[in-house]
Length: 459
Image (cartoon, rainbow, N blue to C red; front, side, top):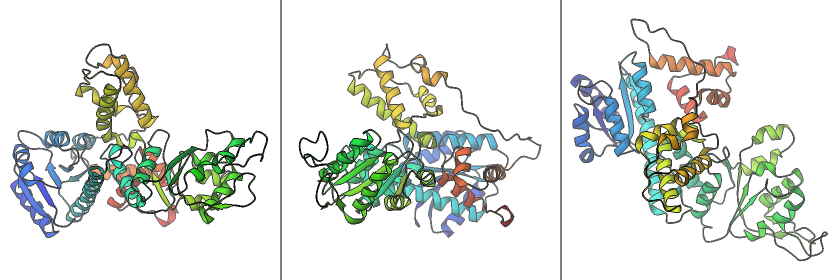
């Protein structure tokens, strides 16, 4: 996004001039402000795509500015500047929603790299918002709430995938919204006016699943008193959503493979196969690669399904989206149960954000509905949040630091943590990311940022 406008906020005039010069040299338009109050006053007029702010400023601090920006413009990307050794404040800013941080003295190459990636995130936000504004169905992308980078990247790929007929494999933990994403892809595809048919491969007994999928003719087996078309045929011309594809028995995986490769199905008891035109979207929470190694899932089917793989992040990896989700689900539950007077104080939102949500969005939705139904007064209190109030904060291994007199480098500490996690798991990025409680995509970005490479002797 060359030419994008960046608002630089710093009370140090020399640093402001240096940042302005460096960013303009990199091809960006720069607007400056001397303090947080001036930045807020100029925000609407300047309409920046990105804000870079120092943390320590007179009056409102950079952290105060960050919180004000996140409250008024949650989609706006903010980068903070922190002094050497200001670890606690920088970490607090990241938790408050800062995209990234820069430490003084600021390295030009690092500045340009962080800005470029931040603007790329902003571009994704704008694209998804445009999609949301242009859609008019309850199954559009506008119903997938959140502005986190992890979610936006998935939605961008999903929006591009929707325009094709390619097979899509959606992966993610239970309750992350895989079926909602599948419906959004169908609704934004050329097949949107044709059927969207769902079959849960894990919810139907094995002996009935083949007939449910492919149909049967009268008399083909005991109990087949009439000819019945299957789900695949019902989806002809539209989209077939195979939920929990990992539960599909091996004998039916062969038939699904034929459907994908040849566009043909074999109805149970029929003399000959017939042609169908369906677009396949599959979803699973299972580790299909491990199932392939165990002989429980066909490798050739896996590669046919994973033409366009999408991985929905768990809610704990997009904690910045939780307040927005809570407000959305709270309003919907109030309307459903006829409680328009019920209020959820903003000071309770951090309890939702701090919780791990093992059941993801589905669990969050159920908890909020229970709160709306069971709250006695007109205002939700902490007593009405037993799950969240009693949950102990999650703690992992702590890196013990000695805070010496000369300060510490936050970047060096982050790099060391990432290196330790990668070495602990023999450079398995997925396991290291899970250990650090971040997404694999975030880990890869941090590795690139710190120029972390596996040494030959560690291979």
